[in-house]
Image (cartoon, rainbow, N blue to C red; front, side, top):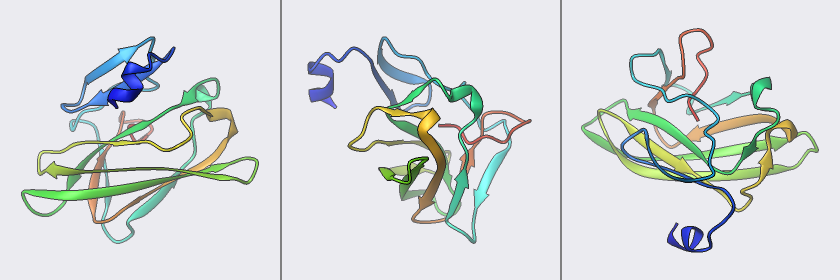
Amino acid sequence: MSSEIDAKPEILCVPINPLGWAYTHNCNFIGHLSSWHNPTYLLKNSLSFSIKTPPELSEKILSAAGILVKPIAGDKAFIEVRMEIKMKSGGVKNYVGSGEIIKSGGMILLNGEDKNIAFKDISLVTLTFNQPVEIATTNNESMRVMM
């Protein structure tokens, strides 16, 4: 990350733990911060699920994603996640991330080679985890996964 910061890009958003902290430069976050007070999504039997991008993000650009997760078992766990981004053009892009997450939860930052993906060009996003997890959502109405 230090090379990205040193390069002084026009826009730079780096979410870090604890949730809510970030290094930013001309940055807009695409969603409101979540908390564990909102409903959560449990991944137990299937370790992956797919989500469509909301229409209100159609004019935004995806550079990285942060997923707020808790391990389901144990005091802490090494959690890996892969985000497969299916493009409307038929192509696929991948973001990956991992981290040692304590039982109270933490954020995993996902990024990939392409840091300039237009949301309007995305057809579907699939998140795949290496183990069962609890995932924070943004609000009670949509159960949208916080990214």
